Length: 109
Image 1 (cartoon, rainbow, N blue to C red):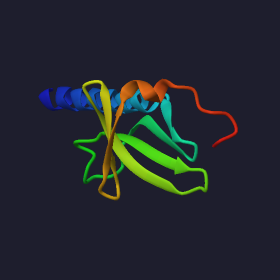
Image 2: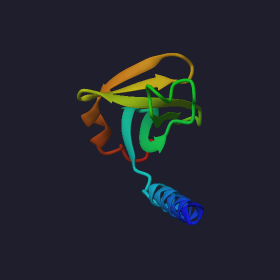
Image 3: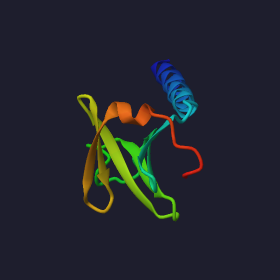
Image 4: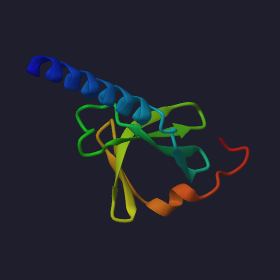
């Protein structure tokens, strides 16, 4: 009887974990951008950082895209009212969080 109850509890826990993951994966991806200059746009997103070396300190993904197609991936975290981006190459940048809410310039990128 106890074994049957434990098996049933385990079954329900597995179902809860599965549905929890489905609901978590269903969260829409949100992206914000900052037009750094006339050739580069920096994007931040609520997707998790894929770089295991820095993902604990910088949990979310960022990327800088230049007009010539070059990209620089990174991960970010918020520090007070700022966004701190750790670039995969080793450098970091800090920007006021509100710059990611400005409209993008037309016909640039």
